[in-house]
Image 1 (tube, rainbow, N blue to C red):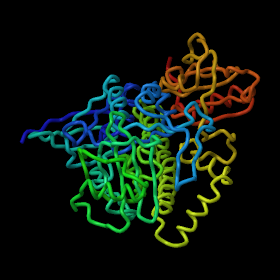
Image 2: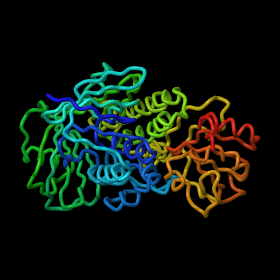
Image 3: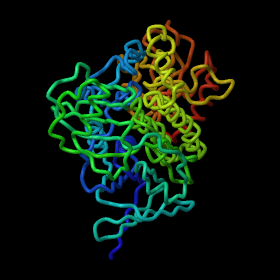
Image 4: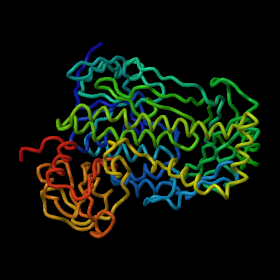
Length: 499
């Protein structure tokens, strides 16, 4: 067997949504990135259907949101347990809804962006070994009949629940199975459901219907009384039966083109980083599909990690910046596990107390406004906040909404016209928002975009705000001195450029 060698700045294992978004970000920033994918071809198996508001904001920051929205159906509310709805229309975002679109559309847009930016994607390549040292990581992979050695400064394992990278690192994946013998199928329907997303749960089990947009539907169903192994055969009649009992009718399921049976786990790796290797997406955490959090959480992992890797590769970030990936994203993963686990346990409702709680939530749905509003912020991802120092400005660590800006331009250049924050973030840089003192950022012109708030007398009139590439506030202060501002820029952007 012959052996070839290839080198990259960053090697990503896994060409799902998480790996592809990460690859696109890195390549856009001039980082040499290679993606290894075990599957020989692109997958036509759609797993995720929901894209939440915070994820759409991240797509907006990459110029992809409008194109993705055109592939699906926006929903301004989510129905749970009959009358209980989570209303999304009042969310403080340009995207006050959840988008229902097959994962294949999300992957297509992210792959096109990554390839256009210069990323290399190698399919049919399976990782077999991994070793790291102080200089980088050596990854052994099989590519057809050849053994290929990839050398990279950093590696990201975005290779799913059964992550080879995680196993090679020896990182445990503790947790448990939440629900087993779940049935999946892609089917045609004789009757179109009244709602785009059809969900139901009762004493029989639960069922879920979501459209592909081309006449095909994905059905997910679970029968409380029929618990078989993943390898047990499935039939359309079995799926139709539990769908009818959970939803009240089966909408005339027919012509299944694919059927399967699986189980859903709740697991989380204790460490998302081991030296120069990181875990992201399902390789780092997995949970029940309740709430549609899986793909969204993985994409948020990628958005958090990408700019930090860019800073490390380009040499202007301290190593401690990479440690913040663990401190920021691990608590989010844990919270998602708890929230989705609570939802699925309410849906399954095996014990009398749990069934009573679900009944109470349904009965008092109309009086649960504040709770539902908090639920909307949680499910949408808009409520996520990262840790900040105790004496930091209240904005530090918070998601910054899509501010209207003026004078938008890279530091050191002539001011431009009006714009939005998430348009400014498309450069992959920090954004400094201030009514004055913008010239203080000129020495970091290759890393920051500057702008003034469109309303100079608004809430930010006396505040200087530094926004990270992922849309969260890195630093803010009221009437800081020029020296304080430059110190903050040096902390987050490293030493100024020689130019």
